[in-house]
Image 1 (cartoon, protein in one colour):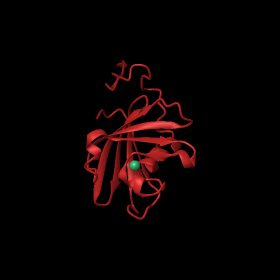
Image 2: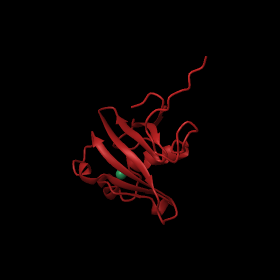
Image 3: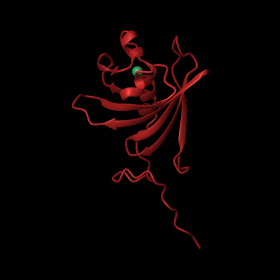
Image 4: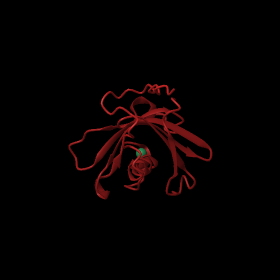
Length: 140
Ligand SMILES: [Zn+2]
């Protein structure tokens, strides 16, 4: 991971299954970043990419890189949609079984949006999606 990209950390709202979970987020390109969801005994890592949706809200794809307790998740990842409360949804089993309660993916994406972490900082090139660090010009 290039050191030029700042990593942000945030605690998630406590839930029954994960009362002390937190996230780390590193934006690597416009609309794309590396997310780890960390609980005391486990850490799940994802590449999160925002994609266009016709729905009124924001949609994200979670590509699972490892650490997930749900082994099925490694096959295709999850799509997470953040819209009005009754429209918010996630593909994971936790959300399906939670009867509409936010799962950790939804909580993580909400935190990323609320903190403005998905918004491209000025030092990233929004057009190219280039993840290579830019060389700083030498000063004399
Ligand atoms: Zn989920």
